[in-house]
Amino acid sequence: MILVTGASGTVGRHVVQLLQQGGYRARAMTRGRPGHALPPDVDVVRADFDDPDSLRRAVIGVRTVFLLTAPATPTPDHDLALLATARSAEVTSVVKLSAIGTGERFGAATVGAWHQAAEHAVRTSGLAWTVLRPSSFAANCLHWASLIRAGQSVPNLTGDGQQGVIDPRDIAAVAVAALTDSAHAGKTYTLTGPELLRLPDQATQLAQVIGRPVVTADLSPAVARQQLLASGMPSAAVEATVIGSAWARAGHNAIVTDDVERVLGRPPATFRSWAQRHREAFTGAR
Image (cartoon, rainbow, N blue to C red; front, side):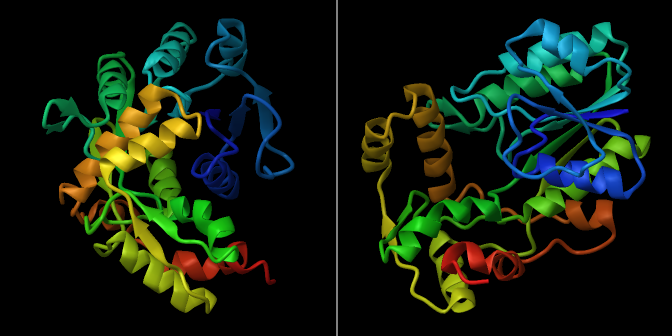
């Protein structure tokens, strides 16, 4: 049995689907009603990282865990709680979804500091482990959909910083490989798409796919901080977002690796192919 946390989210739902398609037993952990449809025969367990009893129920009979946490306020606590429960239940291996650049120093800040602490906990857990560090998700652009349909500009927090934008389905496919093949134990994979793109490049490609303009508006880190705080985002989450965006803006995420191809035996998908698959999300047309 493989436990998938974050099972109804951007990456987790694809992990569940691929495991099911491959004939593996998957248990989907969700905190509430799944935000996306899960396969009808998947074992779904309701659990919360802040509820130890629910975590104990979630790991019963589990051999391997896909560890994806997305707390509203950045903290490694959820990772630590699941790892402690997994060890007590004799889980044997874990695949941790982290983020590119984790642990890098940027001025006085550390990029992905909470992921860094969680990665350390994974590597010292006594379980067989694999760490995945994906670059910027192509699916982040789905947040633009309502703005584009309303003819408004898309905020650009990363300026002309290039990123190896990756399709979440490729992240999920690598995760499934790591969950089901011990050859990936002890590896840290940096997962990127096949090309470097600025956010305006993504906007241009998306505009070509959907047949309508996609205009970007550059936001400095200071302005981005003000707007995010005004939106009600927790201050710690705002700081993590601003640090990561400024790090990418400064060119530190201009990285393309061959890790996806080495694991899957095929090149990663392009941003354009992702946009074509999600065209109706931006146009409302089927």
